[in-house]
Length: 314
Image (cartoon, rainbow, N blue to C red; front, side, top):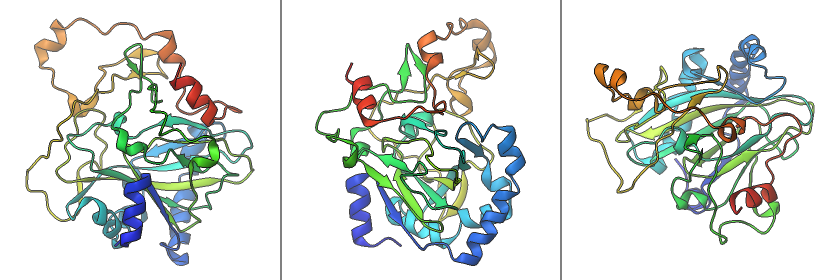
């Protein structure tokens, strides 16, 4: 369980760090399981960009055991309550090359909006996370702003496109929360926390196992349905859905690698009958501006705070 102080810090800042969670023997087991995925990471160009290898709990029993372990679940339950499910899981691997692996400013929730915002991500570090190797940075208190718009020209870009209130933006990057768990430690961040990670400035890897937990009464409105989505890891599911009084913007996505548009709102939305699919007009072409936005940043590009302010207040 989390202490009262840890809970207070989480709800104040939107993220916390807890070290010495995973014992050395278990950490070795998890590293060994991650090493078995090296071929898949290489195919996904891990030498060039940060890779999020999805469906982690389906790839090795060690990851599945960790996702439902009291070490993680009891801490998440301190924030979201006892009835918990997995929404998705992934291995986050940053390139072990200087100047590569930056990730743009974003929130998690706009990728997979739910009926409520009771979702958190737990990242279990296999390597030390430091400012030098591209740790995550969070704008403190940004989770209190609600979902920010990640669309450009009507298309979901994966990167925040909305201006922030001046009182939220720190004067400089020293005002950001550096999320720096050591190997065997964890971080927990809110689904609405605005965050990014800069490129790796070392030749050392930075790998983390990421589990997105949700309260069992949070129902997905859009996005994909990974194989482990809805896995009950704690408590019960009683069929109730809790709806926050709000209006969410659903992510209208397009398939960048193939360069073609897709049905924009994903498997979870999927509310088109067979005839409606034929009768509805096709989606308009994706704009050049939207297509040019990169979630995984090219080598040498840094998602700096000045860049965020300039971009979002233009």
